[in-house]
Length: 530
Ligand SMILES: Cc1cc2nc3c(=O)[nH]c(=O)nc-3n(C[C@H](O)[C@H](O)[C@H](O)COP(=O)(O)OP(=O)(O)OC[C@H]3O[C@@H](n4cnc5c(N)ncnc54)[C@H](O)[C@@H]3O)c2cc1C
Image (cartoon, rainbow, N blue to C red; front, side, top):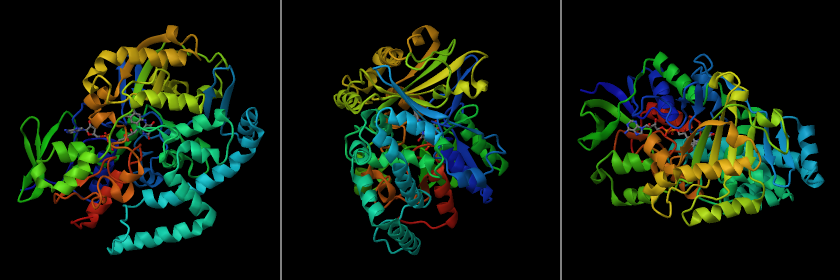
């Protein structure tokens, strides 16, 4: 007899979100997490005594506002501190700080191009309208074109109406966003390299593509979504680190009655009578459930957790071709004191937001060139934050934590993925040297460092090939194609096995959307191909 209505494999923030919604609806739910700590890639850990890091993801913006409300996450401790600014230093000693103050931002941009400063508002309005349109897509299960199922037909009608309301200019822009490179797209508005380079990087995060690769304009929009209500400051730090997002969701899930077990790795999905019937833990323990929901990425779920004979060749082919190709790493630093930029000394607002080392389009494209041949970039794109400046709970008094997201670090290293440990420290040195060119005291200020290569992300966090989004956000594996054509609505070809992680629509980032939409689809109760 089944002990649970649903077992969720993985306590990442999407697995926890799914659990919370199912438990809220009265279902008996068990979450099984492999690690000692919840959150997956949205996790806070005291890596060095007194220093708490958002070990992987470090800023929050995409978390769906209705999930925050419906699960009452503020009551469970979630607090978002807005990012103050977006700062870029340049090798020639100049710098650019974009902030919540529109006048000040225009003045800063005008230092590079008066024309760009004038066009900024027009760009923001267009992208905000596009974001509102895309919100229709990300807040609903993906509708397959041509599907005659009533729910999908209804969605297609709503989408068609929203597209019509965009008007011809924005409809064209939508097509351009879907097909263009981030650089080509930005070229339609702006002329200065200094502005376009830090804007273009949003298009490459988590992809194995360059800023000039077609398709990256859409990823730019995906990251722009954080500004959906026109509020620049809607990107933020979770107080206590991004693990607090997961902990708040776990708190809600427990309050609704879900059970959560850590250090409970699942070895395989039990299949009986052609349908998922429970799980077997690595310890050998068997637990039965009416439904099994996987928070793991599509490769792990379909190629490792279930015997392949339960899937047909076409589906397995699609899953094998599904691209993970991790391209990012992370360096977390415990600092003895706050370093400063040579070009803009002191602890100003520019230190309290995100800091990009992305001085030009060519710099970024060269960083990608190296990655194409299996080398980490000798001068990588860096995205840096210092959360301890706005959240003193994460470091001892007077000390700081710095989080550095790094691209490119290709999982497929020229010497093979398993060679990454040999290159780990040299990779860490490259990152510190790159940032040190702008922050001369940085090296002396470091007390401890944690270097995570894509290989480490796979080993420690279970992210296949180190892909931060459970699969690239490229068009051919988004919406009704994520993770496979015909199987984008959380159901899988194995009855009663569901997918609720970032490898399901609408994809990666701390959104909670795949977990929520999976739970809501399950609660509607229908099975079958979707
Ligand atoms: C370095 C890095 C930086 C990022 N930066 C940002 C950012 O700043 N902002 C943002 O929005 N997004 C960011 N992301 C992306 C974001 O963190 C992820 O897309 C998201 O957290 C994935 O959530 P998930 O619940 O779908 O999956 P995961 O977080 O991957 O959760 C899966 C869970 O399953 C567990 N698990 C694996 N195998 C088993 C098993 N056999 N049995 C039981 N449990 C198992 C894992 O331990 C994990 O807890 C970043 C990701 C990384 C790696």
